[in-house]
Image (tube, rainbow, N blue to C red; front, side, top):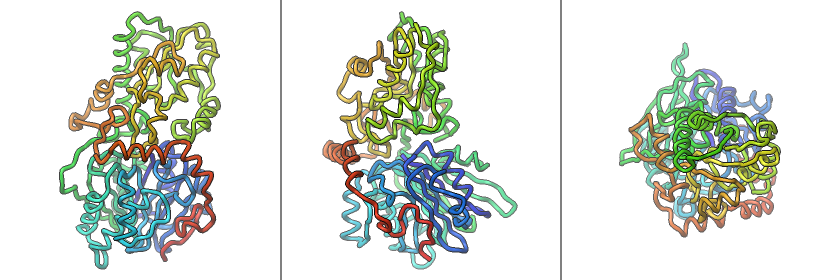
Length: 513
């Protein structure tokens, strides 16, 4: 899972992109990068770490120009080496930088074709570098001199034909402008905004609308599935829809967990969807546990608060903040390795004993993925003196891998995979476990937008909307991307200075001049 932003402005964009990435930091805490274009040429800074750690004052001063893109990263495909921080750069044609949120399911096929037939070099194992080279190759085949909007659109159309999976992309073409596009199924989110200035309109694309809000851009709309957005350096906006049939199937897990509650995605308020998740979950509890003896409802901070309030209201029980969160610990779901996740739960949350002592407590969480967090939190509640600990998930059981850009690659690491609710209940140590139904979750999310008739629910249903996902593919993904494989790979590989050419971590460089 990653976050992307692109801005074409009449004023310097370095601080604006930095602020946008900071607001999107929840989408990835592994690496961050910014590339800008101006009179001094193409400038970049990127590296491993949080936005605040990668960029210092001296770096920001060198990121000159009124056009730029930014990226924050959590690695799903590829690795977490510094050389794989984005945006990526290729010199031909023009010089193109690209940032990508999502995952290509036909990475292996594309990588082979790029090297053998398209004669393009790949220096990393990242599918984002593959996507960049596909776009660059297709644009080079169509454009002589400055590319026209039609040629840019045709190149993106060719990308859609070749690339399978989920992707939201921002790309900077040196001296030309910014291109943004979304996969034909609209799996990964992308929004378009505008800001009026005395010199004319500034335009911005970002993974979530909250990034537009913080910079005082007006949200125009979501980028449509398969749509191409091309903003020239002078601020001229071009948009073209995908010429073939598209499906609008946004990832439902964005609303469950990833997106900020103050964002609007696909014309849906994330906050409202989570309120309704609480309503639906309360109904499920009443149906499955009508004679409950719940004394208090306690949320797992922060993403479950909104749903938990509604659960308490519907059940007529007290709502209490039983855990205090340490704001300086990252999101445990996107931490590498079970041991690291388990340790971080203790560092992240501290129980308030008086809210648990002698009570029957209902803990409400947004979802249960690997079960590590749930198990540790239930243990904390019991240590704080809870008589009984019930656990409710605002999402259905996560039983299947997510292959479209969320780090759920290995079915064997998902606690609900091939297990009943009762078995999961025993494993996490709850006195009772209640899951939301999938139809209840879908009803909660699409309530205000009847135009969306389906979602990507693959991690709950095992149905992969973009196709091309076989059992053999899932087995290979699990082999490559399970926790053990990641740890082995990262311990074996070093990232010597200069290994990535223009993609070197921490590079504070003038590129392509």
